[in-house]
Image (cartoon, rainbow, N blue to C red; front, side, top):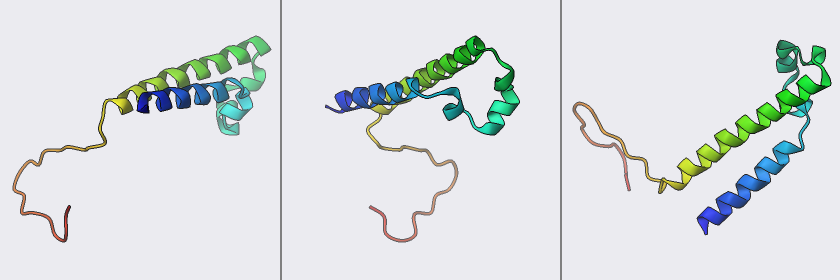
Length: 89
């Protein structure tokens, strides 16, 4: 069930990204730094598609990693440990 929810969330998020314009994806500063206003329409569309593709790859990887954890954080302590102060559970 958790996998189905994650897949549905992934599809919805990727669908929303696909409908966004370049101006919605980039801040004004980012647009200025990338000089998007001087790009041809084809170049702007290529950049938009590249941003979406990279987002999807990163989002999918993050979701896959989230499925492999049970929400527990484990760590090791190096050195002397004198215990917790206060109540722990």
